[in-house]
Image 1 (cartoon, rainbow, N blue to C red):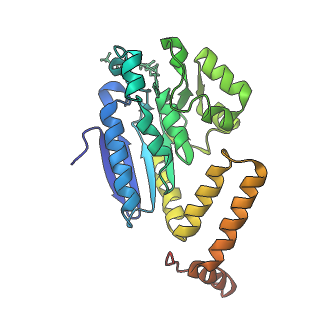
Image 2 (image 1 turned 135 degrees about the horizontal axis):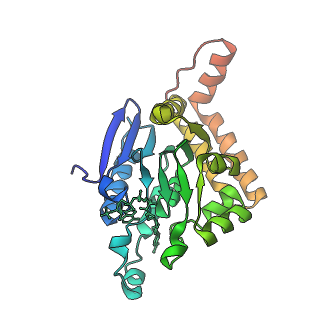
Amino acid sequence: MTPQTLILESHGPVALIRLNRPEALNALNAQVLTELIAALAAFQTDEAVRAVVLTGSQKAFAAGADVKEMQALDFATIYKGDFLSGWAEVAGFRKPIIAAVAGFALGGGCELAMMCDMIFADTSAKFGQPEISLGIIPGMGGTQRLIRAVGKAKAMDLVLTGRMMDAEEAERAGLVARILPPESLIDEALKAAAKIASFSQPAVLMAKEAVASAAELSLNEGLHLERRLFQSLFATQDQKEGMAAFIEKRKATFTDR
Ligand code: DAK
């Protein structure tokens, strides 16, 4: 079914997802969640899609979970229904996904960006976890992923005061990988995604898995996993091809085998 809250575009091997609820600054309601999970599930199995870029509008990546949808909910309802737990599936997406952020990335919007593998921001981007001003706390990873990205001092500052940080501060703090001018944000994100898509997919997937697991594992466990993944890539034809191409001074032709 055609999604109502997303615009999906195909750019060769890269799928571009635009959050599209302009009337609510892309606030994340149940429909966005359902449609985004369905789109990612389809991209997961679609061999033609090798990387994804997730973006919003010029004004907002996403201004958070939908406050108007949440306001009347009571504890029993959200607890029994495990409200918003489906967002974890975004973090479980196996192919590389880049968040291209312009404007507001607040609350669940900031948390959604942090579920992606890296964040490219344009100069208008503003990140924050303003939930405290609504009488709640972050619930989609804001207290856990933010501290891993920016450290305790800044995470506490953002979560306890609800203030926003601009793109430059977010880059300095380690939340943002690249800052770009507004006119080239999407192009640069697509270009980076296409570059990733040009490599051997088993290597790309293992690279993502290894880096992502660093947040979950002890150093020794992480090093062990990295070593085993590294060793296993020597079972691929692409390792032979990549190294042969280097030695023969030509471009590698990867087959994902
Ligand atoms: N929800 C619903 N509508 C929103 C919205 C939001 N988060 N953010 C903006 N809108 C709507 C506004 O209500 C307005 O609609 P109308 O009044 O025109 O009908 C329209 O978008 C334009 O917004 P503004 O008129 O406010 O635009 P401004 O440029 O003046 O201000 C702003 C932009 C982003 C500073 C402002 O809209 C704002 O402060 N928005 C709310 C930001 C916020 O508090 N975000 C955090 C939401 S709480 C959970 C997991 C996660 C969460 C919850 C539970 N569980 C696992 C249980 C997450 C919670 C959140 O994210």
